Image (cartoon, rainbow, N blue to C red; front, side, top):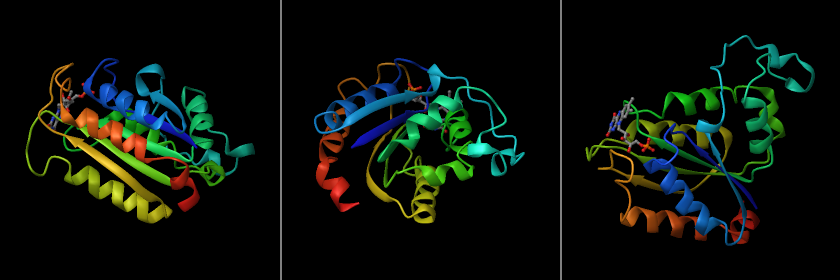
Length: 185
Ligand SMILES: Cc1cc2nc3c(=O)[nH]c(=O)nc-3n(C[C@H](O)[C@H](O)[C@H](O)COP(=O)(O)O)c2cc1C
C-alpha cells in the first residue's frame, strides 16, 4: 500500500513531525510511506472560485505547492492526517491543504482509509473533540475507514514528545496497517 502522511506543522523537528516519523517507521515495514509536510510547500488557501469544476483535468487556477501534493495524495491508499492542535482545530497550513481538496479531481483518488495523529500542549479532556468530530464527519461523508488515532496532550515545545509512550503507540499503529488492511478496505 501507499501511505501518505500529511504533517501540518511548520516546525520541521516538532512534536507532530516526531510522531509522524515514528508512525512511518512502523508503517514502512509493510508499505511505501511518504511524509508530506506543509513546511516543505507553499499552499495558498482555496479561493472558492470553482475554476477546477470546469478546467481540463480539474486543474486548480492557483499554481503553487498543491500541484505536487495532489499527485502524492492521488496515489495513496491511506492518508494519515497529523497536526498540532491550534485553537481546537488543525493548523491553518494543513487546513489550506484540506480545503484545496474541494475539487472534482479527488474522485480520481484511491484513498480508502484515514488515520489521525494529533498533538497539543494542554491536557484538557476535550482538547481533541472538535478535530475528532470533523474527522468522523469526513470519514462518513466519503465512506472511508478509520484506521486508528494517536492523540497526545501535554507536549508544547519541540522535543517534549521524546520518551512519550505515544511514540510507541504511533509505531504500533503504523505496524498494524498492512496488506490485510488493503484487502479488507
Ligand atoms: C497558534 C497556536 C495555537 C495553539 N492552540 C492550542 C490549543 O488550542 N490547545 C493546546 O493544547 N495547544 C495549543 N497549541 C500548542 C501546540 O499544539 C503544541 O505546542 C504542539 O506541541 C505543537 O506541535 P509541533 O511541535 O508539531 O508544532 C497552540 C500552538 C500554536 C502555535
